[in-house]
Structure formats: C-alpha cells, structure tokens
Image (cartoon, rainbow, N blue to C red; front, side, top):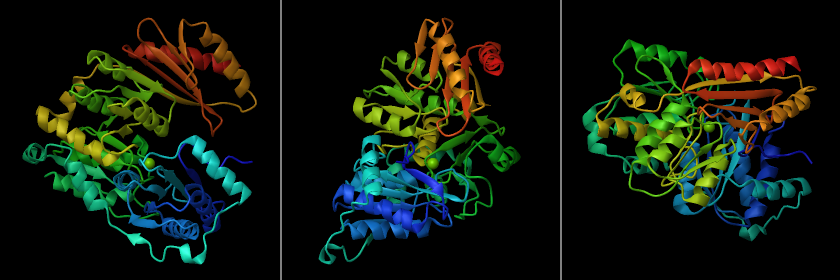
Length: 449
Ligand code: MG
C-alpha cells in the first residue's frame, strides 16, 4: 500500500495523480472517517485549487458532512477558523511547491493538522474504498459560505499593542508570492498603521513574480527594492501564508534561526508559563533563551506538525523551526506568518528598537547548512558509517538523524532526506571557522565512501 500522506497532508502533481477524482475519493475517506461532522474548507490561489476544492466539497457532502466554505484564504486562517468553530478542516494547497503541484491538508477540530495515526486511518478507508455515503435525505442542501479574512486580521490586531505600532509609522515592504497572503498580510500591515509597499500581491496561480518558496534566491526583487527606500523591515511569505521570512533594511536575509529567536526572546520574558518547543535542527539560541528565563526547552524531530503537537501536549509558550516557521499556541495550532509579522512589529514598537538592534541583542552563533547529494546505492553505507562515528561522541541524540553536541557548545546534525537522495548537514558554533570545520570533516568522510 503506497503511503498517501506526507508529513502534513498530501501533495501531488495535478492531473497526473491529483485529479478531481483522486480528491473526491480522498474527501470520501476523510468524510467517512469523521462521520458526518462539520468541515471548514479553504483553498490557496493556485490555478487548479478551485477545481480540487470543488471535488473535496462534493465528497464531504456525499458523506453527510456540513461544509463551511472559506474560499481563497491562507492555511493559518483556516486553522484559526477551525479552532474558533470547533470544526474539522480541509485546506487545498501545495504550500511553497512549484505551480503544477497541489495538495490537501486535513485539520483536527483544534485547527492542528491531523496526527499521523489518523492519517493512517483515512488512508485505510481510501485504499479499501469502504466509504460511508449517507441517504439522499441526509446530504446537506447548502454549504455555508463565510469570509473569515477580516475577522482573522482583527483577531491578530487584538493580540498586539495597536496604538504603539501605529505611532511607530513603520515603512514595510511585503512579498506575498502571488498566493493566499495577498488577501491577508498587506491589509493587516495597513491596519497596523504601516506604510506598506507590496510585491507580487495579486493572487495568480501561475506565480508570475517568483517561485512561491521564500528562499534567498527567490527573493531578489524584494531584497533589491528594500534598499532603494528607507524601509524599517521586509517580509516575505510562501504560497499559503504559514511561513514568514524577515529581510533587513540593507537587503540581507535574516536566517530563520534569528527571526524565531527574536520572537522567542521577547515571549520568554513574559510572565506566562510553558516551555519553548523547536526541532533538533534549530539554533542553540532557543535553548539559551529558555535557560535564561528559567523555562523548559523541548527539541522534537523536524516538522511543523510535530512541533505543534508537542506544544499542545506540554502547554508550550512558543513553537518554531529553523526555516522561520512560528507557532503561537494562544492563536493557531500551526505556523502562522501573518501574526508572526505583527508580533515582530510589536516588539520593535514596544522596545523602540530597530530590527538590526534587536538582532544584535541575540546570542551570536554561526550556522552552516548544506544539502549533500548521495548515491542512493551508497546511502545505507554512508548512514551506518555516520552512525558509527557519531556514536563515539559523548553527547549524541538521535531524535531525527544524528545530532552531536560538542563540549564547546558547537553541534552537528546529519539527517537523510525522506524524499530525495540527499543528506542535510547542519553545524553551529560561536566560531564561524569551527562550524565550517565540523561540516568539512563529515563531508570528507561522506566523499571517501
Ligand atoms: Mg506553507
């Protein structure tokens, strides 16, 4: 039986595998699994998202589920709505993937993505085709259509100090990736009193402006533009609005480790309980911030869903990932780029400090992050050699890949990709040369096999 779900929902190339028929059967499976309960459904701005969305709605109705339609919206907005209304969720999106991709993410009634065990239950129904269709009398006659975007924007504003941010008159440039954030983030920033310049801010599933993944290579328009006027900060999002990348006024990309630490540093000082949760791939800055403020620190395997679950289980205060993903448990049980932007402006306004000054206050670490292609035939041999070598180190954890902590505070992480023939090698140290040397040592070993 082929595994249907990835780490969060399914993603496939449209009309190769992800046809309306495939989406319909997946919706029958989810509808059967949740047994006639209500589902909130949304979609991103891809060309074929409406086609898949209509199929999902039909499938859910056939199984007797009442459907609340949000139409075009961001993934965190849908997750917020599920939590407000205590409904299941289905989001049609392929997040940051190229334009030919689409996908479906299912949410629990808290708004968190469906757990892996529940994915497996839905998968079993999909492959057995044991769908539960209700009698014609029990098919809901109408879907309920709601525009939630304004309520969601207001809910974010309620979480920050609006007068202080307004008085700061921030000049902000935001790149919306021609995706779902177009409907959310520019409006939010305007409502916060910012002078907003927006890029790629009309929904267009051809992604004419840039690839929807917010990597440095894809953000050159933004990083160039920001240096041509006196902006305070730049933001970039991915296609479904759960990720946020921060750009400095000089056009430099702020690594996710730093943007999440900036927020963690501020939240950790608040008089609220709960540990900070992040993945093994994130900077030691987070651990340091937790220690300084006397709160717990939890490191999970890589994946936003894993972080969200650990936050729920441990009543965490903040969850984050090294790619800039931030989870605020008092708002949405998943990554949320729009509220992350508002919280960063809130920090700048309340502390009356520039982005650059706030970044300078953080513990300074150097990270080296590499993707190393490996011959699939040699992958097992390479991994067993890395296992052998790292097991000799005193302080090693194997939550996800192999992570070694060295006595000087530096660390190394080597993880095989689950989907591609490559290894991810990360190292961090207070000293740049040391971080490079750690990675080089293992590169040499890998290349010698
Ligand atoms: Mg995304």
